[in-house]
Image (cartoon, rainbow, N blue to C red; front, side):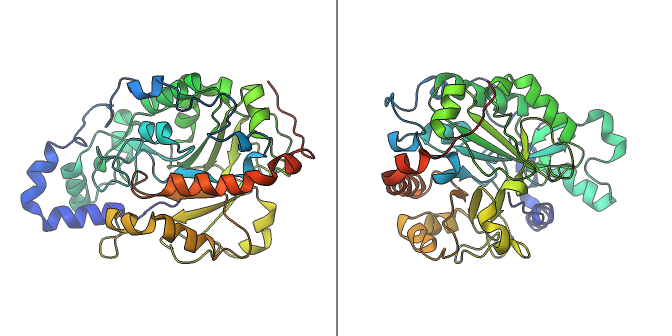
Length: 365
């Protein structure tokens, strides 16, 4: 949900200081002059195998099934599209692998791409030309990128197709996608979602005026086969109590509070007066990542420290107002994140049946 707005400047700085490396950039995976994908265009074979042999489990645990979806802890991949096919990546491995391993929340940024690579970005910077300027409008296409497509992008068609494959193969799994919508991409994102075939899985029909007071249980979503929740912010998305949101897409900040970006030490809530509405929102996201101090770029070294079980436990213990129920990390394959989240949910699940028995929600099939 947090976007490193300085990534373009950081990339340019590095490229200028390391001029000798520019030639290497020209042949890197981000040097795509067509609408290609940094990852494989084919469906990864790992997605066609079920992730769990437990037929009575919901998102990996039996105890999750009768709990409302906002009463368990979700593991999220921050900037999930950004893998080792990107320059200054947030993650080593692709988001498809994260799904197979057990992450159930993906944070994706939509961008307008024009096929430029890192060298083109420097030239545009020097000449004062904006990436995505009107003169390139005919060449632009939708991508999932972070800050600039010149550092890498993934094809939304491929990514969404692979997510659908995962849901097809794993009927007991519920996913959350959270989109940071880039300027000028909202309609293209709607179209990509419509074209993906995911519509049949999207949760819709919840009555709310910007705040959902009663979220369905995992089992209710599984029974209805509405196992995909879509949230979005920026790029024209506003609170659904102020505008008519597209059916099936929730405005993120109607339902999420979050901790500050680049803060791994506290549980402070981001934004003014957000403590007052912390309990009103269904989800409290802990942004658990910190960029490199010098260049403000993702840091695997930081993740190796912050993604440990001990560090996660210590930070959760600092949350006095409310325990987070969503945890977003960089370098998802580093550390003990999934083990920590599983243990959190095992603790929560001890009283799950009693909590869920008084809950109800209307889901349209």
